[in-house]
Length: 321
Image (cartoon, rainbow, N blue to C red):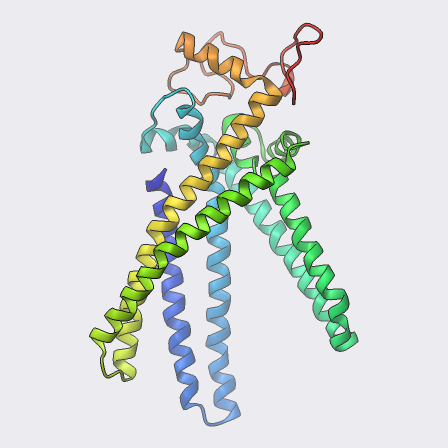
């Protein structure tokens, strides 16, 4: 899990580092601007780097959504104390890559369109009403954030569903919506606590990294000029992005594990998946498959029976949802 997360984080760190160095160099060129024409020429590359930063963030989010579905494989297998290697994880997830790409693209595009709509409405209100539009824009922005979080948590299990239950994009989104029913606040609480923990740990690690970067800058360029400042910037950016990629890999793997365990927990509550897991543990069947999904063993029945409903039980013995 760490290795897979590190690949994505390292890719994002390299791109962000390149964009950061480029933006700083463009910003330094503003010091030599002496006319409006030169300023307009310098703003072009600056906006291009800003757009690049946004593009990199979107790409990292897209790849993270795909990777979240892949990482559910070792988590679901670990429930039965079955170890999963790097190659085996990707081999089991490989048939579901296309649906994962589809759901990641759909979620990313939906988020971008929603953000663009809110920003467009805010710009239109400020254009027509002036500063008075703040009375409308502020509640609108807060409401949009609430709706975004609500929908995001309702659909957060779609990648896991697509991989484990081998569904399509639409059925994966619908299944995630159904699984999170009546459990939204519990999922929100768990996700919030995990996000706070991850954020605190990341900040604690970044503090000494910042101090080391500053110390390195003082040693490399005690009397800074333009060239030495650029060299120092590149060096400190490399150090900070490398540490950031390592920390990000650990935190992402941890968050993906929590999301996968939430999925398994909801499956146990709604589908009686714990019964199937006990059977797999006792019989040792399907040792190379993904627990909770359609069995690859000939003659075995798919799980869950009845299209995702808990198996029939005598009256009064139905499990609590």
